[in-house]
Image (cartoon, rainbow, N blue to C red):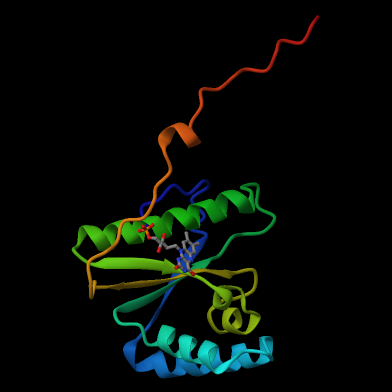
Length: 158
Ligand SMILES: Cc1cc2nc3c(=O)[nH]c(=O)nc-3n(C[C@H](O)[C@H](O)[C@H](O)COP(=O)(O)O)c2cc1C
């Protein structure tokens, strides 16, 4: 929770889903999927059931910005993003493996209603546990591709 937070608004919070609540989560996802995607296939329902029962601890990160505050909502959402990253780093530093996942569930009105209050939204489902296999590295951007020195705009002619 020690993150950059302009205005010290704490515009984020956590909800944990216990192992004994995973069946309830699966039921929620099933209902939401059925309502929001009438064409959803069995394989999709099975995937959601698997998601709800992923091993490890499940922390749902909630973005809870204050609308109309002088600190823009964008900055409050950025602060929430730093919480997610901190949670991943902290978990890894403690010897766990953690993953941040969203997918349709994070944007589902029904799923959001089950976790969030007014004005809030799900920022991610963060699973924390142990790796069942070696982690694979993925491609990372080259620094040269995402960095350039600032070029000041041409001085306007006076
Ligand atoms: C907001 C957000 C949502 C994400 N949602 C997913 C997701 O739904 N599924 C997924 O495979 N990866 C998702 N990712 C990416 C993973 O968190 C992660 O970056 C990816 O699995 C590769 O892991 P690595 O970055 O540690 O190499 C998401 C990342 C962010 C920041």
